[in-house]
Image (tube, rainbow, N blue to C red; front, side):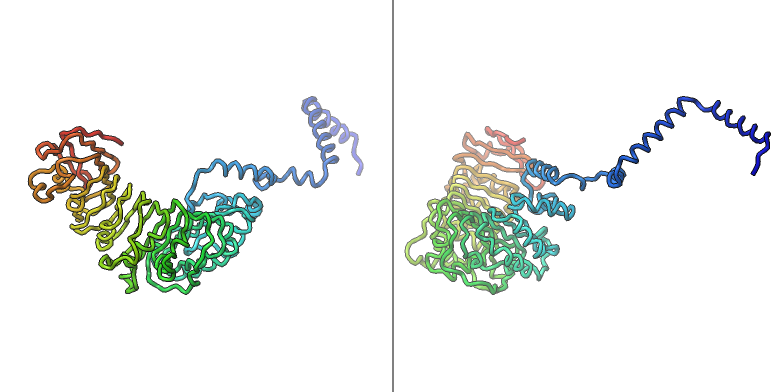
Length: 473
């Protein structure tokens, strides 16, 4: 195609006008930028271009840096509950598979083994992985439920058995074992733990409900290899099995150590028409422990057979310094309080009493959550200890205060009561968030005892005309 001279001239004018309107410096910068981009594009490899376009994420962090972050997190943590969703390292391992694989490579992170047996149980595969991750390091094992509200879980025992089968080869590494389940029938026999456990110091076999179902587990062995064991918590059925299967020295062989702490809980055979524990046999069994310093009985029934004499001599509990009685009926409390020696500290929690029941003269007596229907004025009328403490006790009522004051009516009802007219030490009462310690420095005459009584949440706050020091306000 041929252009006329006029067309060529018009094109030249148009080009000249464009150069006239464009700023020289902009043209220079644009050309320089274009050359620079071309040079960079020629020198960069395809892989470099891909990385340049990719966004950096936390998964891009080197493993060494991630491990440093994990370690910093672990050192900054305070002691957490085993059911906490942020429990380390389980919360970190649940983020993604790469984090799980990385944190599983550090054995020291997995020495606290937490396994669940509720409706969302720890799988057998995960259980095996957790035990493998700790290598051969000493471990502390918790096998628990997230909640104990649901009382209809027939598969709990099967889940627990699956986990125990995986754990058994690792018992020699266990420093502590805690089984806290819903039903007593889900628990294994004490024979499961009869293998060598040279590091074991704490053993907890506990349940929330005694269901009376029989156990089809291993036979109770004669010997145990727990050289370091000093603290044991047993459900009542396990304690019953030990006493029934063993000879007279069954517990001395089981717990031959000094400074021993023992808890027995949840054994109510009368509700299931099952054989129970007699008071005399229980005392004989407990007396075999060489140095029993702490004893806690919770939710246990004992048959009162005090008319039966002890086989040889009465057990010796002189080493007992702290006794905790919790959720016990009057039929059990009566022989216990009448026979047990004076422990330095005696805690009575949510228990019932007969009017004729009287606690020993322990130096410190603490009454917790005693129902208002319980006759504590009669029960404590002969108590001659040193420090009496009430915590959240509706039973701390006017009758008890009148007995403290020793007025004529109370003197007639409780003649010779050490608490009537004077006290040898201090009394303390807890009313919600207020704790009042009453140091009675003078005889409490009835005419000077009570100046004003105010009711707060079912408790009685008393203002006396004696020298009381208030603490904890």
